[in-house]
Amino acid sequence: MNLAMRTDSDTQREIWQQPSIWRNTAERVMASSGRLQELLEGCGAVVLTGSGSSQFAGECVDAALEARLGRPVRTVGGGALLTHGALALPPLRPLLLVSLARSGDSPESAGAVELMLREEPEVRHLIFTCNREGRLARNLRQEPRAGVVVLDERTNDRSLVMTSSFTNLVLAARALGWLADAAGFQSMVSDLSRAGSAILENAEQLEQVAGWRSRRAIFLGSHCRFGAAREAALKTLEMTNGRVMTAADTYLALRHGPMCAIDDRTLVVCFLSNSPTVRAYECDLIEELNRKRLGRKLLVGSGVPTGLAAEEDAVFETVEAGAVNDNDAPVLDALVGQLLGYFRCLEEGLWPDAPSKDGVINRVVEDFRLHTKVEDGGW
Image 1: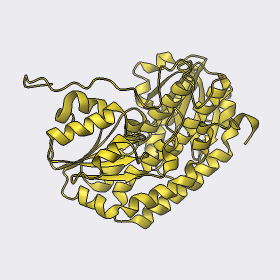
Image 2: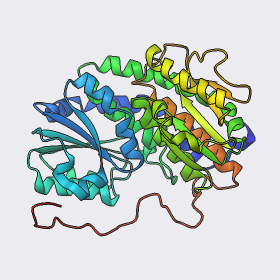
Image 3: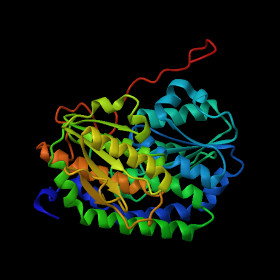
Image 4: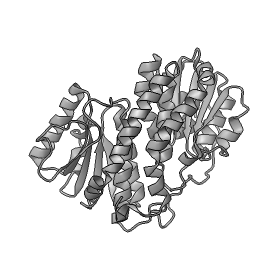
């Protein structure tokens, strides 16, 4: 680790500790597999919920979880549950609502669950949280319709931004599709841990990209990796106090308008799929950007084709080609995004633990008024 990385900050520690904690999360969740299987039994659908990064964690998982569980899985933001209640949920009952929460104290997290407990008796609840003393963990510990799994206390990030909490919540939710194969899940997480350690060993390459001092950044991902792209965009936005404006999109959607935002001071981060068909579409888009001389790109993935990167671009190889599939890769993409945000924060002369100098944003969203349903037949 070079001098720029040694900030003696919670953020730096929380980013670098992640691969060593991922195995712990796998063990903790599998230790509760009996209760988790009870909650899933007979459920017509599963909904993952959270706000901000916690919502994006669900988006990293829902498609893979649906494939393994063989039932509908959707991510619904905590805010949508507050504003629209059961209308935001699939109509299938019983339903399992899985809350992903770092602190469990945010107004959306607690308010949405409390609303569902009151209004929807056929909705079961599962809480994955990093905070044993948070409102969600305390209030639902004795609730018969609920289960609570608390992750290692080290995942309860002290920094402003979610890092360890994010990737470990992703893996906790992902485990729901592996309850009958604990050994297989733990093996997959071990592979991810080794890949994550390799990313950290090569972090200086990402520090160099942050040194480009781009004023805008667009993060591209396909399918479940779009959730990681959204989280990566948020990390750079938060950690630069909004000085670097960011966005996330899919490769094919970029052509439908957002491409106009790419100029010569825009960083385009491309999380490359390991599916040959999906990657073919992604490479077509990257080659179009090359022809139009739009942006400066960072290509992230395994086995990046020679010649795909333009002269001023950078390539960051994450794992050996084919070693990790797209369903498992979001935690690695998120780790890359965290490092880019962290180094860009240092480039701006900001303190990683508290980049929002004026206090516009906080570690936990401040309380706001929760409104009750208007009795007019709707919300």
